[in-house]
Length: 334
Image 1 (cartoon, rainbow, N blue to C red):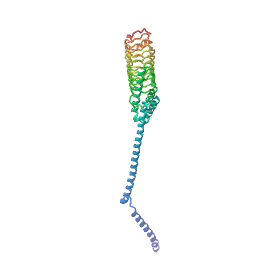
Image 2 (cartoon, rainbow, N blue to C red):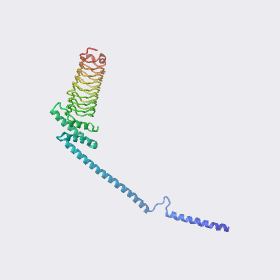
Image 3 (cartoon, rainbow, N blue to C red):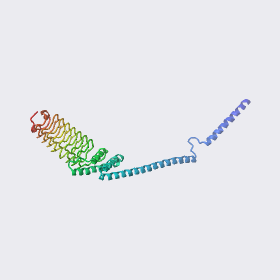
């Protein structure tokens, strides 16, 4: 017994010492869920507020820098625009060319000003083109006007429709250009190249289209009440939904052209080539098709009331698919 009690006392003292240290530690560090001291909370909040203030300061500094940068950039754009427009009024063609190309670069550098630049260049084409036309009705487009047209051909699709009414664009290269809904009233386009151009809804009232190249052009629903179409090449052109009432279409090429649903009432198509043309549902009432080549043309449901087919290349089988073919004039049968 004595030995046991002696052996147990040191063990008890050791355990008591350890428990005492544990109690003192727990008194210094609050248990989980115990409310921290107010000084600790204040310190933590101060740190969070400090971080937020630094972040806010950086944000507003960046915004201010960005705004200043935008102002500087816009100021440079304004200066470039002013210098370029001043160059357009020069008597020297090379200076005017510099202004035109400068405006072309500005369209890409400042999309917000693209609409204004397109309007300025369109006005330039009208003014300088009309000036040349007044001096010589057969004059070709000048080099600076052609340059302006080239720049406009690269404009964004979102810019407004172009207005070239009354301008001289003789022999101009407008191939592949997007002229959708453009105003080309009274424009002289003698021998101009508009192959592959997009012209749906374009107004060509009173335009001179003599010897124009419209190969593969899209002229759907365009206004083609023109003065002269003589010698024009409209091979594979899209002419659906157009009206060419009493238009002069003699000696023109319409091979493989699509004229479905169009009106050519009273049109002059003498000696024109319409091989493999799509003329289904087309109104050819009173049309002059004498000596025209209609080889393999589609005449299904085309109206041929009183049309003149004297010496035209067309077969009885073709006419059998058309309307009022019995009322055609000059057809002797093939």
